[in-house]
Image 1: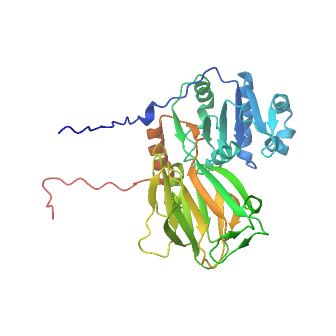
Image 2: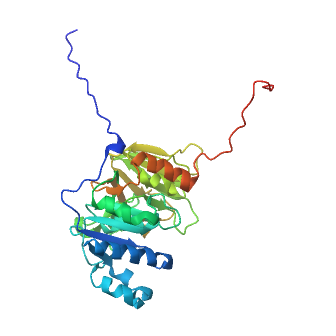
Image 3: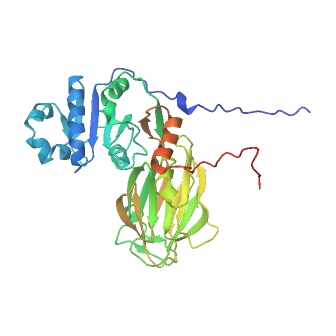
Length: 359
């Protein structure tokens, strides 16, 4: 009837179509090994010898090489001399590394993510830890697998991270009865901001206190609810199979652009976990009538107190973690559900023959 109708057609990308491609052959690799695990020393040595024989520049943390067993190994000394070393708290190697190899469990990949607060190189994770949800590669065939990665023959999945900013008041700043900071006009001088990149989840909990946690949750500036319980988990789809699933959340494939909000033991019969779009901004603050403070941790690290007047802002990060797949993003995920969580394992129902009575 003369009306202009615009139909928008969106193209849904097949997750399996994402491939690792190099603009030029990779020359440097960061090897991350779980600290204080004697079982990883031999795989670590084998891998490093293999990489140096392929003329790769190998980066290793200094604290890894400080292991007395590694230092006492005379046959490994010549290889160590070829390493480039760095310290987590001092050196920025983000522009020097082409890809990362992790030896350990899921915690090793989380640690690798924490080293890169901006762009992250592709990560290849070998299952040498206790769980292995994020570590799809078996070390038995490491030589052929690493060679394939160097040649650029692999599928990849972009695991979204959360950008978390914790703003806290300085100790000399005053707070009124409504939880508003009294700054005497000097707002900048009374606040301190810390930023984190989180791969699994941000957890706000009641810490050592016996009272309920009482925190306000805002979405794009609007108060959506007050969490009264042990706390709340804000997670990525990758983190949906970590703490969140233990707290009753659904499991979400890492390719789904979303943020999960899961209460921890809420004192309510109707507070179900929810999923919100990846583009929203979440903010968490202590409720003004909260009886005690709360505590926050980022991928299980950097645990710290949240006081009245502090706030935590959470958005989807622009810097995902490119995880190299063993097969492809879909098959790897379902394989990890089956192997790590024994998803939908049940004894098969017996076949009913036509001669048997249905009742």
